[in-house]
Image 1 (tube, rainbow, N blue to C red):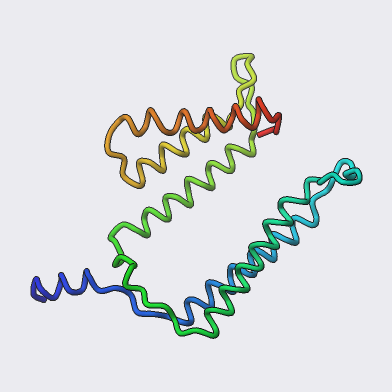
Image 2 (image 1 turned 60 degrees about the vertical axis):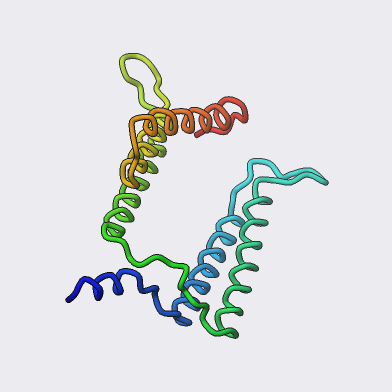
Length: 174
């Protein structure tokens, strides 16, 4: 294969695919239906009073909004021709590796988050800020940090901000 052929292959954009558009919209609709089912099954400690909203409100609103948007996307995918995809980049090498590493890091983060706290050396240690900092640092490494500043000035402040906002200010247990 000549160099010109290799360059042409690298710059080719993916072909339009109506099937992909329909499958993506249907998967989104199914996922939002699952979210709605889970939102409606949230157990409440106490019912909300008149004029108040309870813990089911926002998840239900977001799920219904997602269902509406998914239905609109499904209708567009069925009725209109598949959109051109010239704005998409060609497949990059290492993309599947990055997605796999992201999924593994996310699963490990969720496991660490579910553990919650540990007691070490007589101290109760919250795992969320530690796990969130490590998770963000791993994602930065996977997606290509450009220097040490990215590891210092992004993961730690973001994890601490999330912890302080939700756990300390709003008193939502993490």
